[in-house]
Length: 90
Image (cartoon, rainbow, N blue to C red; front, top):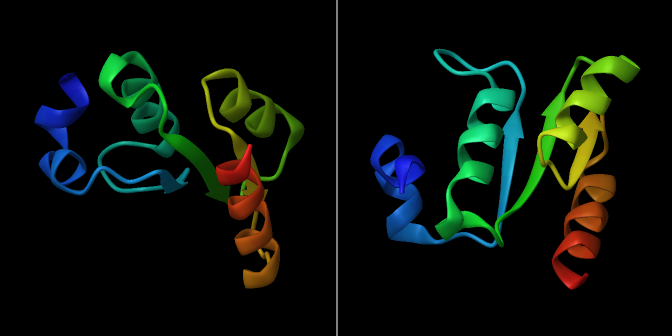
């Protein structure tokens, strides 16, 4: 419910998958991911974190807080599409 109040577009669109950049203004992708995972209405939402921060610690953090995948920049569009399709098919 909290995520819905913070991001009303999320309630209106009900996406199956969300791409989150780790470095965003105001809130980091980690903070957004944590908020979404704490919202029981968004339990099934698949989250892919995108970032230039490719260190093992950042990747581990993203996966530990609930991201379904972690993709480092630069990445190919084909790779991202294939990873997203695999996550949605699982």
